[in-house]
Image (cartoon, rainbow, N blue to C red):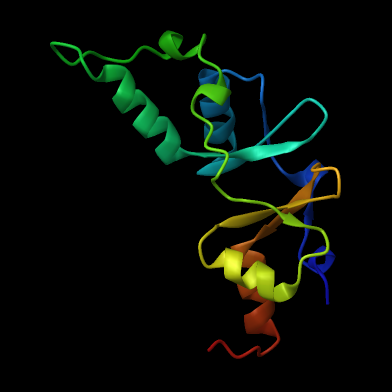
Length: 143
């Protein structure tokens, strides 16, 4: 069995473009109800993943150093690019040739595993839910 068996193809994955603003990214995540989303370039290269926590800590950093706390206006986030908060080390991808063991190891620490081709383009993702569902439906023992 290979990665393709578990794969949700790129065209069915909500992604954030690297040129998006923080506001656009937040709106995309809210619209789809996701807590983390892959970030890709215009030519579909996988750059990393942003999560709700990344946005939270970014906003906390925005407020530091002020004498009095203030409300963050959504307009404050219109000029800030997603690359300003992107952590490229979050949710590292695996190649399309990855083994099931590699997927399982990553699934322990990631809600989804981005899958890339030889050029670094996002082919799709494998979700932890898909892996768990397969294991429970097929009687795969978990050690």
